[in-house]
Each structure stands twice: as C-alpha cells, then as structure tokens.
Length: 182
Length: 244
Image 1 (cartoon, rainbow over the protein chains, first blue to last red):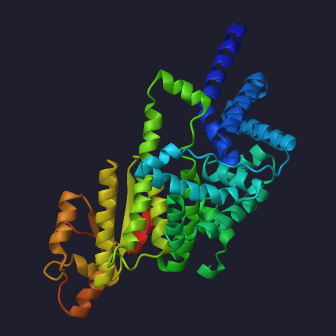
Image 2 (image 1 turned 180 degrees about the vertical axis):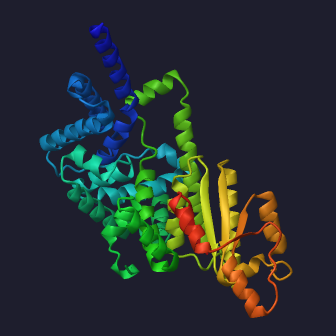
Image 3 (image 1 turned 60 degrees about the vertical axis):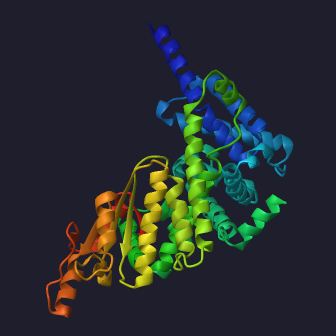
C-alpha cells in the first residue's frame, strides 16, 4: 500500500512540475532573454526536480524549491560561460507587420532593454519579485541570500529602472519610434 | 512621520506590503495629502508593473509550440488579449497627451498611474476611486475626461470596472443640484455607466454655512462623513486611487 501511495505521490509531483514549466521558462527567459537557453534551463530544472523529488520535505514549499533549482541551473550556466556573457535578444520581425504588435513590441523592447542594462544580481531579484511575484522571503530562499540583500537589490534595481523609464511617453519615445521605423 | 522622511527604500517596502499595518496606514494617510509622495509611489508601482508586463508575452518555448500544435491554446490567446489591452491603454495615453487641449494636468503621476492601473487589468474587476477636491473647470473637465477614458478602456476590453467618484472641499459643487453645470453628464454616468458619486458631509455642511442656505445634492449622490476615511478604506481594500 505504501508503495502505491509513493507512486501516486510521484506522479502527482511530476504533474505539478509540468504545470509550472511554462512559468519556469518565462522566468528563465527574463534572466537570459534567449528562448532556446530559457527552454533548456526550464527543462533541466524539471529534470533535476523529478530526480530529486524525494528531497522535497514540504509540498507547500514546492515553488520556492523548484525556482531555486532553476536559479542554480542558471548560475551553473553563468559559471561555465562566464558571468559577463552578453545576451542579445532576437526579435521576431514578422511581429512588426501589424500596428498593434509593433506598438506592443515597442513598449516591451523599451522595458526589456532597461532590464538588460541592470547588473545580473539585480535583474534576477527584480524579475523574481515583479514578474514572478515572489515575496522577499521566498526570493531570499531561492537565491540563497539574506532578506536584507533582497531588499537592497530590489531597491537598487527599481531605482535604476525608474530612472531609465521616467522618459516613457516623452520625446525620447517618439525618437525611439522613429528609429524603429527607419 | 512626514512625507520627506519616507525614503525610497521604505516606499519599496510599502508598495510590496512589507511594512507593518501601522506604518502602511500612516503612509496611506500621508499619500492623501501629498501629491509628491503619490507621484513617487506611482512611479515605483509603474516600474513594478512594467517589469511584469515586459515578460507577459515571450517567444513560445519548444514545449509550448508542441502543445499548440495539439490544441489551440486558449490561455495564450487570453494573455495576448490582455497584453493588447495594456498596449492600447499605454499608447492611448501616449497619443492622448499629444492631442492639443487634452488633459493639461497630466503629469508623470498620471502616466505611471495609468501604467500601474492598466497593466494588471486581466479581466478581473478593477476598482478605481477618482478623487475630485476642486470645482476648478480645468480640473473637473480633466477628471470627467478621465472617467470617460477609463470607462471606454474597460468597456472595449470587455473587463468589469467599478468606478467611484468621490468629492470633497469645493469638489462637491459638481454634485450640487441646480448649481452644477455637469448635472446631465453626471446623471448619465450614474445611470448608464453605473458610476457612483460620493460627497463629503463635512464639505456640504461647510458650504451650507458659507452660503447661508441648505446645499442640495443631486439624486443618487451618496454622502459620507469624511471622504478621506472613505478613500483610506478603499485603498486598504485594493482600490486604485486617482487624484484629479
């Protein structure tokens, strides 16, 4: 009976991981801005999670645990490639054919470009907080730093982004638009 | 605690609801009177929302592509619709400011307020409280344009909106029957668009005393003891605050 229970629990966890795959991919994408790499990182994180499922003590901490694995995969990648690796986002030009999509990509480009300029530790924290919606305590757990460090990184990241984005809707945006039209 | 004593890192904690209840309430109160602080909060909230927005639509992963082959994903469509709405609002605002004679009072506060408000529309009911504390024609016109704009945006997105317009100080004048030049407009908003209008009882009493006659409000206007309490209560319950 215990074996059946364990098997069922394993299946249940596997489906929990699969359900989170898309979100893992998106977070990974927000760090690396590369869809292939983000896909690989999400895949690797799921694989490691399944492999180490027995180590998960409390199912309530599943999200934090899973994202911590993803974060570690990302850190491993950076270690191998060198932390200063530069990611260049590949844009889908077909998107620009439609006005709406063009306008959408214009805003997204602007924000992502600002995020790209952040040092990686700030980028990681700000996306975990403001995109993934994790609390300070959860982020501290995921990236394995004190909560105070999370606060300080988040503060620095938002201050930096605010300065970059304050011109939103100003002449600079018009210039940006014109540059893209050329 | 004064507005100047509120540091940026404290505001970060405030928007993330990481302060204790007393501190949260204290800042909520200061926000009601301090435009500068509201602007700072709006900017920070906008940054937070924009980060979320920037990744609400990313290139599909291999896994998603496979899945999409098998079924036409409703989820992806929903996200696309929501993002389109946001962009519409953002660009709507951007073009809005270039229209001659449009809301001159628009400031960075409004830009970021809009961003902060609209990015998370996502088809859940959005509750917005619009505060008018002046009967100045420009302010009232701008506020009513804002009301029209919000209603149109949510209507186009087929997203539910609960909009309350609260007035105090001389702002109550726009709700006075036989006095307000906006009677028809306001009644139309109340009847057709389900906008609720509130007037501060204290302001009504003051106006009555000043004018030496009973101040009558239009039918349907709800009076509240103090509008500041009403706004404070709304803010604590997740409403979005816009100051005209």
